[in-house]
Length: 222
Image 1: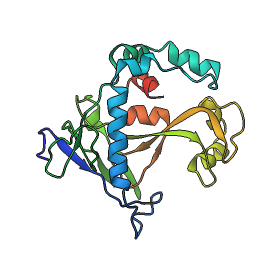
Image 2 (image 1 turned 90 degrees about the horizontal axis):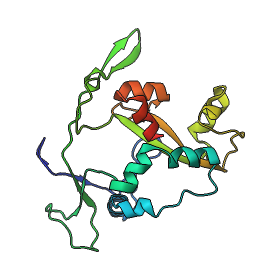
Image 3 (image 1 turned 60 degrees about the horizontal axis):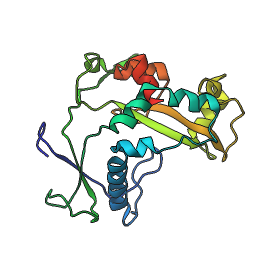
Image 4 (image 1 turned 135 degrees about the vertical axis):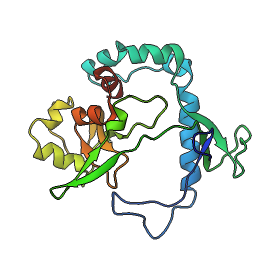
């Protein structure tokens, strides 16, 4: 796409990586197309107010979680207006919209800005500067990777944080010990950096500072 002009087109590839090790030597045929279609389906479904008005919060989730989300201003907005998003839909290799029901590996989106995140070496440690986000620019990329976890399999970094940081799991609302391979009673949200060479874990306070989120905006994410 042309910088600053709609649309930008994401081309989803069949390449894949494992954790932060980098790209693997083989590929997964059809992966890119599947991801593009999945994203398009989610956007088109969640933009509909009726999708939220008809959705029932699972009874298996703890009562405090269900009550908190049901009473939130975010949920009221979603039921009234649906999810606002930046997607224009699937496009072919020339950028033309595909016919309804057709599939493609490209997704067109609204052009967003990406304020710079700079870094410098301070005493042997790389320190990142996100001050460009403190002015809260409109229609810009949020410099966060938001991870939804439904459980923690063996080898998950979540297990190391839960075991190594006293009270961490409890701070996320988990009252029982975390068991590898078992599902959480409700989705758990964690934050990582998006614009750095590797995905650096962020506490919720750090995530709010990096992206200049208000307490209410952070609550909406979690």
